[in-house]
Amino acid sequence: MKSALLIIDVQQGLCEGEGQAFEPATLIVRINSVAQKMRQAGLPVIFIQHESGPGYLEHGTPAWQLAHGLQTEPGDRFVRKTTPDSFLRTDLQELLQSQGVSELIVCGMHTEFCVDTTTRRALALGYPVVLVEDGHTSAGNAVLTAPQVIAHHNATLTNISSFGPRVRTVSAVAFQPHNQGIQNTR
Image (cartoon, rainbow, N blue to C red; front, top):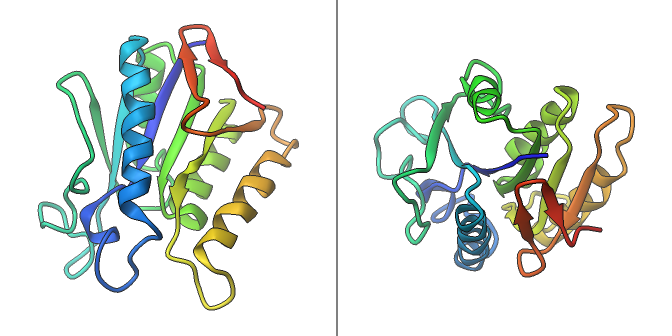
C-alpha cells in the first residue's frame, strides 16, 4: 500500500484572529515532522488550501496562504478546494491515482469540518486513512472546546466501519511511513 499525506487547510487565516485554531504553532511543528518523514520515505505530500469569497480565505490573500512555519519542498503538490470535501470539484482523486496511492495520512484544520469531511469521503472512495491524532485541530464551538472536538473525532472516525476501509490513529511522534503502508499504528 502506497501512502500519501494530506495536509488540509493549514492556512494563515485559520491560525490568527477570530476563529483561530487551537495551538496552531504546536500543530505546525507536528505536521512538519510527519511531512518530513513522508518525504524521506519518497512518499507524496499534498497541501490542500480552502478558498472562499471576499473576506474569508480569498484566493491569493495573506489569509489564504499556507501558515507561517509550515514547510514545503519543491516536490510537494498543491490542491485548491472550495468545499469541506477535498475531493469535490478538485483533481485530488486523479492525483492520488496517478501516484498509485492506496492509503491516506490526514492532518490539518478544522477537525469537525474539512478534516472530518475529507476523511469520510476518502473512506467512501475506498482509501484506508491514518489520522494523525495530534495533527489536526479546531477552534472549538459553543458546545465543545477544541481539545474535546479533537478527542471526539479521534474516537468517532476510528469507529466508522460501514465504508469497509477504516480510520486508524497514530501520534506524530510514533508515525513511521514506508512504501507498503504505515507502521506503528493502533
